[in-house]
Length: 69
Image (cartoon, rainbow, N blue to C red; front, side, top):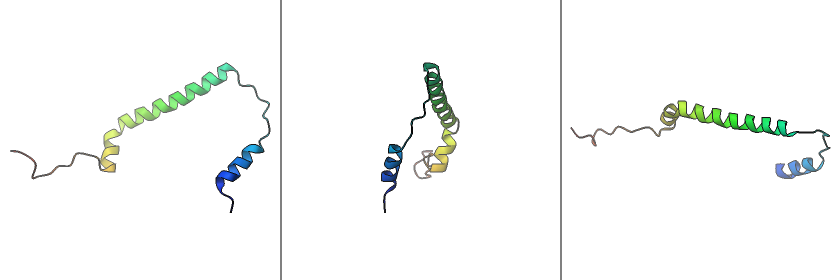
């Protein structure tokens, strides 16, 4: 059975030209969209960081024997 990588490679060889023009303004817009997405993910991680840590189990563990009174 042919692997998915080989199929993807063969499909890339069969691509027809799009005859499209991407001016510098379009490239700049795409870069802004990508950077905005990265910034949004970073802010979301910052806002929910402690909830994510608690869900994964990386939170502080409270051991009763280690506490000093």
